[in-house]
Amino acid sequence: MNPITSPTNPTIRHAHTLLTNHRHRKKSGQTVIEGVHLLDALLKQGLTPHQVIVSQSACNYIEVIDLLNKIPTHAIITITDSLYKQIRTLGDGVDIMAVIDTPTPPLGTVTDDCMILDGLQDAGNIGTLLRTASAVGITTIITTPHTAHLWSPKCLRAGMGANFALSIHEQVSTDEILAKVKTPLYATSSHTNKVIYHHDLRKPIAWVLGHEGQGVRDEFLSLATAIALPQPNGQESLNVGVAGSVCLYEMLRQRNFT
Image 1 (tube, rainbow, N blue to C red):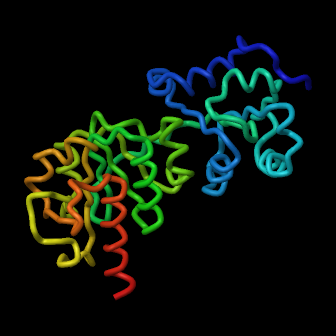
Image 2: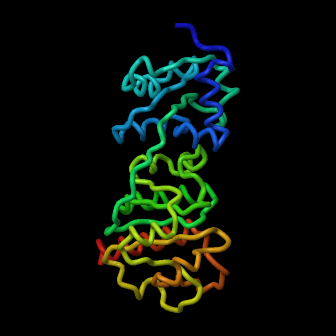
Image 3: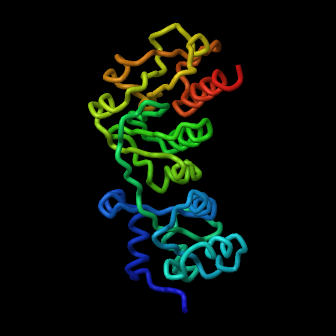
């Protein structure tokens, strides 16, 4: 079959709009992953892409051939290299992308570890926290309204495939979170002197991590156990991705390496 050459092809237009338009992603319930690594991570979790778009030259790469062999032929579209360059958002690399359905699992009662992202906006911070949560064994992620979309192409790239191993519940109201999450809330705060190493973190915890500038909102902070992170050299604060990762690994240390 000859590769597609036209940017007006409906599938190509849909994929390009998903890459660049949040409203289209929300309306369609789909998003796009780019690159070999993310597609491989998706398949390893037993998930199936809706559509795979690959450039003509990328079809010759061994890693691409291996991935395509795991995908139904009818779901694969080949396009010219020049057309792929017109729609991609990544730089030079192995040109393959996939349209996937955005998971929307229902939020049930939470009694185990979880992570609540309250208003975070930076894809790098979000990706760091998702990867760290997955690494230490937290699988439930909840976001409040006004938090960046965790299934956007930027957040997916930053998460390096962690999204596919997590149960992500987005845009959940504060009231619903407080009603559903039965696990004690913990949050970093500058208004306490009790550092993290003096807390017992061996029981289930709901970690609340707040907006890069404004921090955790009072609705959560007033109900949470406040934790301080030591900063002997006097920095004003830690990046939220770093602070959250420190907390998660201290929790892991106490449970597994004491």
